[in-house]
Length: 349
Image 1 (cartoon, rainbow, N blue to C red):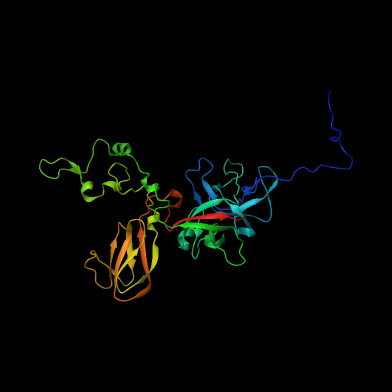
Image 2 (image 1 turned 90 degrees about the vertical axis):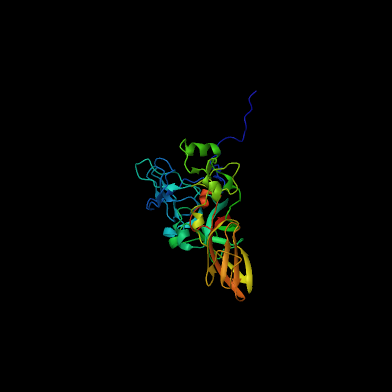
């Protein structure tokens, strides 16, 4: 027969209280609105219809304004997201994707959210102007080392992360900083295959010539050693360069780096980078084309090995060597001028 629970009945003068947890805290399930006063920072062509006008970019530090505003779509008050520090907004998380402009009565914009306790990767650099100019989130890393605590920048560095000092609001901690030219070391081998090369060359192939009378045709690139610099992978490739325009690190290779070296009197060997050097300047020293003929005050660059040899006339401490290097294999999210490498950060909101 049917059984009835004698406790499940209304008790006059009492009420239930069953709601407490709304969601997990790694990405709180709150329906925010994006500050309608924010200007469009750039157009993201991969965003699709109504999703291109970016007002808060992926990776930026996001804050919530102190006072809620009316959401015109629902007619209800909603918390307003903006860049941390703007209009008194306290930092609450990181934008996990681009937030786009939402125009009233137009099908634009997207639903924003934040991440608060994830392990993220951001590009870092020490040129404040170039880091500020990056479209997406980044770390301005002047003075930053592994283990340092981070806060958010203001002014030109609004939305970016910076090193925290006493009294700052802590939003993250640096666990790793990878400044190698080849980030993670293998993406440089991702190149177009031989089929793509044949399709790109077409039937009318140029650049072939005979080495002498009656000789077989050959590609001159084999003779000057540039055959494997075209972005194609085949059995002859010895110097991988990544997919052109995607994994070749062309923008990041424009970044000027520096290394401090203590020089002894005489010949000095300084290893600069695990990638081909493209430019080296040393104040007070002159570059020469032959290592064997170096005189005092001159230096020679072994570009392929990433090594500089210097002939110093005396002991010199803290000599600054400025250089640029190829950055084959750089992922697209790190390939910007001014970026030295990848910083991995645990968020601490």
